[in-house]
Every structure is written in structure tokens, then in C-alpha cells.
Length: 382
Ligand SMILES: NC(=O)CC[C@H](N)C(=O)O
Image (tube, rainbow, N blue to C red):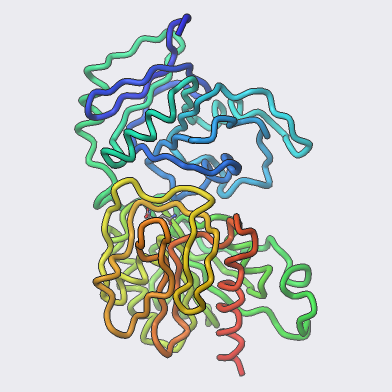
């Protein structure tokens, strides 16, 4: 590099990657993952499940479609920072309302460009998701020793409860999305939308939108809501959202709350962290994966139909399928590594998936899950 590096990424093992900083200045400590999606960098950065993670994009053209407010999955970017191969260029896209670098600067997120992301990705695959420090300083003053020590001292995501941190503070009614326009087409519009309580552990907006589009009337409750508070809304179904951190770290509030709900005759649908917490509530265990699954082309087999779905994924923990109790059926598996991707409870309208149907890379492959949830509420109503 001809000019002085203005950003650097330090791995806990002492490996240093220099590059050009963009976005905010400063320093963050986080887990480093790679994401293989070719589109959706804004959705990825604003997905609350990426809290305390720096994302390396394997696709080199990041920033080229700019920033579009409608694409935000949360109010602000949540990923701690990003690593890209080429410096973001000026956007070229009719939907673009801003530039990635400005947006990141305003929202306090650090980026590093000019990194050999292929080498970095291989390192992550070989050693597992490392703890890193990412720093951006226009003067290029980096105290490498201190950075390495900080990355080493960081305790990581295992045992870390982040769902509470990113959850909403108060309950609210979700208003976006239209039942009449979506799955409502051709349906009996006399039918009243189904009352759903969505627990917000870091919910992506498009999940809430998709619930509405498929026929739900959604009230969102904070992560720490009790079963009593959930039931006070007289829901016809309960949705458990995605979210950051270790699912087992929610063992003092979310898991026992879900266990209580399981004693009621209520349809329950979970996505990602929601899936993992449901599995824990049913008596299974979760494990930390080596480098997780982060991308938009992950093939998943539906064991019950034999069909393969192309899915979007973002998880670093997984449900240990060996630990599933007898009454819990493994419905989906990853065709990349055989890890668990879905469960359902025998004879109950309770099911969940590890991947993100609302992200729709298939694009419609996994939409049946929202229909299944609504159908189970319809059945119960009858
Ligand atoms: N997208 C999610 O909900 C992620 C769940 C969990 N934090 C994991 O990393 O596995």
C-alpha cells in the first residue's frame, strides 16, 4: 500500500491486516465472521443479530447500490464494523438515497477497505471465528500490542446475553405491511387478522412485515416480557424472533417464559435465536459453531418433503440435533454440514427454523413457513 494505512484489523493470534478506513473513526472489539451474500449489505449491517460482530464480505463490490432507508432491518446498523476488499465506490442505483461511507460515519460504524478478504476468510474457516480489534484512525496511529491484548482479553460471544440489549424498551403495535396486498390476495378478506405477539430479541423488520403480509396483527413485546404479559394480549399465536448473542445466556428469562407458553395450546413459530431458545425450552442444547453460517445461498433440506430450499443464514450457534428430546422432530438440515436447521413438536403447532425465511434469497422457497404459522392459528380459531 503506497499511502499510510488508516485502518487496521488485529486478530487475537497477532495477525494484522492493514487497509483504508471509512465510516466512523475509533476502535471496536468483536467476533469476526464472513458473509458470502452478494447483495444485502445494508440488511446485514442493520440485522440486530450481528451485534458484537465485525462482518467480512467475501463479495468485493460493497457499497455500490448505496443506502436505502426502506432496507433497514433496524433503526441503526448493529454490526460493529465491516471488512471489504475494494473501497466502497459511489452508488449507482435508482433506489439509493445515500452513500455507505457517510451512513456509517453518521451511525458510528467502522469500515476497512483494501483487505485481502479471501485470505482473511480462509483464516476464519481454518481457525474458527476469531476475536478481533478493528480500528480506524485518519493519522494511522495504531498501538498494535494494546490491540492484540484487547482482542485476547475479550471474552467473546459464548455466555453473552445481547438479546436484552437490542430489544425494544416497550411494547408496540407493528403497522407496516399489508395483509390485503400479500398472501391476503384471493383469501377471505372477511377473516380477521390473527393476533400475534412477537417477542423482540432483536427482530428484523422484514420478519414483522412478513407476518403481517401473511395475515397477522402483530404486537411486539420486549425480550424480558413474562408469559403472563404475553398471554394478557390474548394472542392466537406467538412469534420468537432472531437476535444476537448466546441463546443459552437467555436462560434466566426467555427460555423459562417459552417453557411456560408451551403448556398452553398456542401456535409458536421461531426464527434463528427464537429457534434456538425454543429448542432449549424443549430440553435440547445449543453449541457454538466454529465459524457459523452467514450468507444467502445456504441449501437446506426439508426432511419431511425432501425439498431443498435456498436460504439466508446468520448464526454462530446451533441446536445440537443429538440432544433433541423424543417428541421433537428434526424437520430441516443444512446441506453444507448437516447441522440442525429446523424442528417441530409432534402433534403441536410449535415449530422453528434456524434460517431466515423473510430474507427470501430463494426467493419464495421458505414462505410456506409463514403460511404454516397462520394456518395453525386459523385451525385453532375454527
Ligand atoms: N440470526 C440469529 O438470530 C442469530 C442467533 C444467534 N445469536 C447465533 O449467532 O446463532
